[in-house]
Image (cartoon, rainbow, N blue to C red):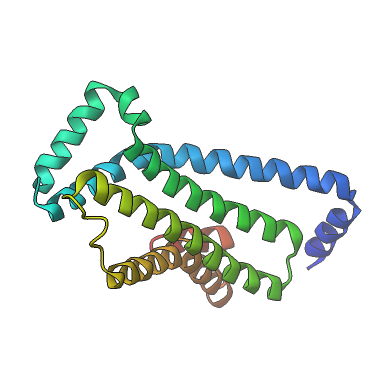
Length: 204
């Protein structure tokens, strides 16, 4: 408790201008980390999503589409990274993780009260879901146009968009919100170190 009061006092003593500079630096770091990490994941997710669309269109099997994509990636990595299909996938994940990181940083920077933490979790879920769902829907429509049969993007029924939205809510909730809830529960109810509880929560 004493440490918490001392930390709060030191934070309060920081001039507002310095405080804003520190927040800006943290946000820049969040953006760079999100873009860097997702840059390594996006190529493989691009292969998977393209294969699913082409399999649904009946133009390729999953394996033949994946093999074709991997060959193109290995033959000319620079062209692959510049391709719209990769940039759209990278954009989805970079935007999602950037949003999640920035919301967490801003909320942690502004307040440490219990009510504020609850509001932060709700804001994290809503903000990240909105960004992820919006960018994913745009990407899915573009993939359907590029890799599906003629007119595939027009024939996507509304119920499919609803299912995609439910999928995104479940993914965001399990990826960004649930680990925090589980980690806090383990820390409070089992007298576990916070860092250890957070690591265990990631397995859920």
